[in-house]
Length: 197
Image 1 (cartoon, rainbow, N blue to C red):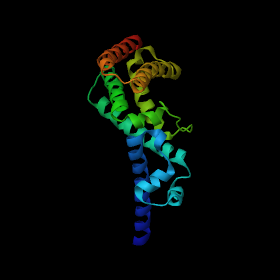
Image 2 (image 1 turned 90 degrees about the vertical axis):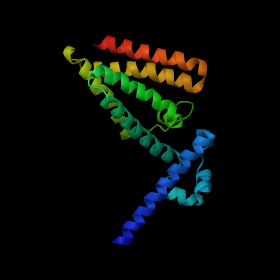
Image 3 (image 1 turned 180 degrees about the vertical axis):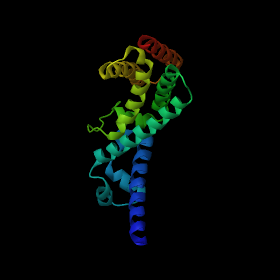
Image 4 (image 1 turned 120 degrees about the vertical axis):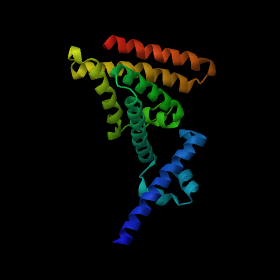
């Protein structure tokens, strides 16, 4: 039994090493620089061993995307927990979302396909951030008894504005715009919150 556990542990370590190596390559070279061969070279394995764990590069991107959404959800939960009022929670969550996009830009790029082709498959971890946001939006709007479609629409209003700003900034990084964008972000969040109260 102990050897079976050890083999499972080693397999999980190898899987983690492959993902860590892939992400390290991306941090150095960008997503366009990622290949199965480079991953194999980085962890000093042969390419066929990499293929035992992941059928292709898209499978690695899918796994990293799921990890990104899990990490984002944790950041959103932390931001939400700092406040009691749902309006403050929602603002803090969108600010945490913004911060995540710029502290882990490569991860954000693969999660949302900014400046790259991302995997087309949905991952179950994507639901968690969405549910966190929509639950707070529903709480803010509870007096008007909104339908799920209305709550979803309000979420996508936020997402469109904030993701749009993030994408613009990832594509055209500029220190001059950073201060302006922060104010635009806060204005947008505040304006949308007022519109749903």
